[in-house]
Length: 192
Image 1 (cartoon, rainbow, N blue to C red):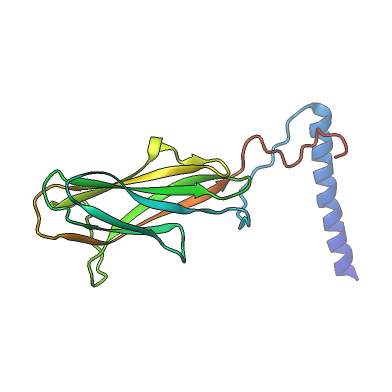
Image 2 (tube, rainbow, N blue to C red; image 1 turned 45 degrees about the vertical axis):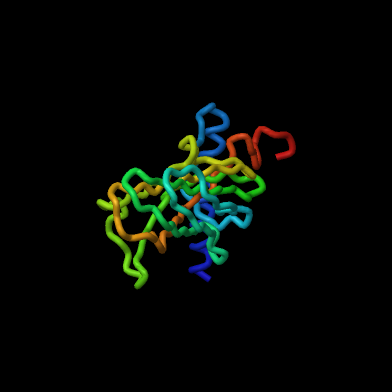
């Protein structure tokens, strides 16, 4: 009995302190700011690769590009006949924000190349070829329903006898962002 009285007393003191702070802030005109970080899984948030195709090129290279059906934030490609210094090919991947209202911030674009045994190359920009990945117009924030092209360019720096560049994987991370014009609730609105 004594323990429950002390818990109730403690809660009353905490609530009284919060109430005094809120009343003081509203009467004195002082802004009351409450800040912090919260993480949650958002059911509406869905950003993915939606298309993959060969873009501009120099030389006879051909591309086979695809999207991972199990994880649509991953894609892959294979290039054949990229043989001579100066030859290049661009692969155009479309990234789409499928969310109905949340913005998406694209970050951590990753490119990895591995050999046929699954061993990953440490340096994808070696003496034979280089790979770059850039978002068209450096646009990294997508509104709901909006798309952007991820341009992946593979350039041959030297004549090399490898006729096929295999096992190239592209992936990205995206984080949700609430649009600034979306107001969930405001204490100034009537009825709140």
